Amino acid sequence: MIVKSLKEVKELFPLTEEEERAFKEVVKVYPFSSTVYYLELARKSLAVRKMLLPSLLEIDPSVQGRGEEDPLREERDFKVPLLTHRYPDRVLIITTNYCPVLCRYCMRKRNWKKGVFYITEREIERCLKYIADNPKVRDVLISGGEPLLIPAEKLERLLIGLKSIDHVEVVRIGTRLPVVWPERVLEPELLSLLEKAQKVWVNTHFNHPDEITPLSKEAVLALLKRGIPVNNQAVLLKGVNDSVGVIEKLLRELQKIKVRPYYLFHCDPVKGVMHFSTSITKGLDILRELFKRLSPLAIPYYAVDGPGGYGKVPLLPQRFKKLGNFYEFEAYDGRLFTMEDR
Ligand SMILES: *Cc1c(COP(=O)(O)O)cnc(C)c1O
Image (tube, rainbow, N blue to C red):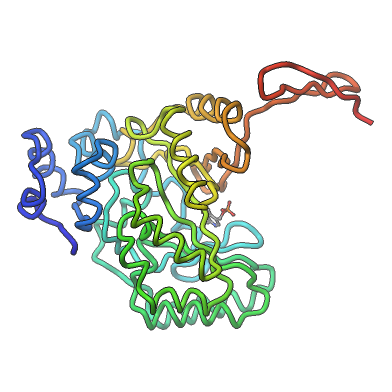
């Protein structure tokens, strides 16, 4: 099911000479991994191919020079091992660095070089204790790697442990499984655990309309049926989805499968990923145009994550300004109107 070598990839579909050369060079630094399912998508979609196949730009110092390994300072801010507590009411737990599909734009690419780790039983207990001792924490994000693929007993201990802490109201699992390996989401044991854990929301990660397939739709609907809300966090990626047309289609297709777009992230300045960066101005221009075409129900926040560990800033296009005792607003079609501030 998991494909790692050039030989196995080539058995599924032919690579161009350039792709093959890049594969051989780049995997020495940043390995390759994919499910067969996602490789099949890459065969048909140029956008998926760009997210999945190694590129020489990843190791080109003139492109990557300004990138950092961990610009968001996730590791500096660990309160107990693997737990980051940045905002007052929510914490992030990194449960593993294992992912079946290594996205070339991964913000945690630094962790690829370490051996595979999974959160240990002891670390789970320490995280649970930290959260139990901090009543302000009401929202726990479970991330990775791919958190839904940690050993089942550990996932169960973590989720059931969080269920029994009263002040934890929301448990968000950040998973790309519905996109890259939907069959795995459909496993009844996994779905039952997520349902039993009660507080679970899934934040998944579709970046391009080509990733929305009948099978990924089935995976999402299975989660929804169990009472698990599904939201989406996309990343704006140069050459993949950095146009209004593609993003608009992605958002419409997400709405069709009842996935609520939550964030569209500006690409973080991560070493090995800089070639996917667009400008912030481009992101804002796309966002402004979306509001002319779509209901806000289908529009995510465009968010920058402050390098240095400042956290995320969700952005909406600025469509009003204050003029003395009046506000001037911009309507969906560009006309201006004012309202008195009283
Ligand atoms: C992203 C993130 C969160 C969650 O942020 P939201 O804006 O609520 O989605 C929490 N903690 C850390 C460290 C994060 O990076």
